[in-house]
Image (cartoon, rainbow, N blue to C red; front, side, top):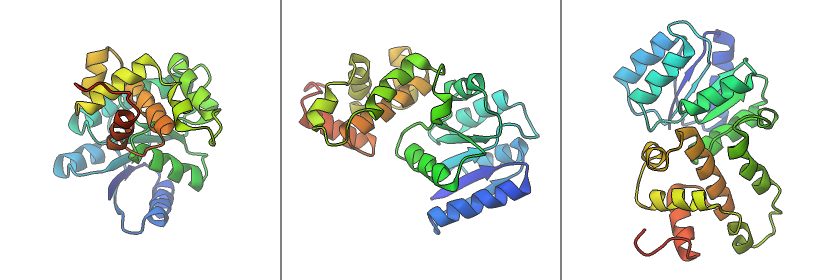
Length: 224
């Protein structure tokens, strides 16, 4: 696994590297200290599995920087690690395609948990930022969190919304998040949230597993 990490504070950058190495000692960590460094690296190397970056760094305004990173590597998930704790900023980063937002005050365990979630296709947002942030999209996630783990899968599946079924059908057709967002008139951030919910409800870890489970349960039509 190859991860690009970026922060203009050397101490935090080194600490993040150690956290990720503890998570997986075989991980290839590439470091950057500015958006300028990031842009150069993603031009030279396009095989990153994940990018973790601070928001406020030299080299560019974060709005422009995130757009450029996402345009350059549309299939590479990006997690924001920031000291900024603002709901509007979180929403904007998700709308721009970020797959997660982690406050710098988070514990090592939370950071690893967020990385695992994002690598499995989900979106990580800290619970304290959920309220009033993308409220309509997150309501269904809150309901899912309240479902007892011992409930049968068939009961959980009943909570799947028609929109989630639409997303599943497009996943089954091999469409990317960007294509699904275009077809359904949604933002990529909202598509990621739906996929997170679907994976949790179907108790699977990736898109292929979701399609297999949905087909087995009769959630997909024959022509999907």
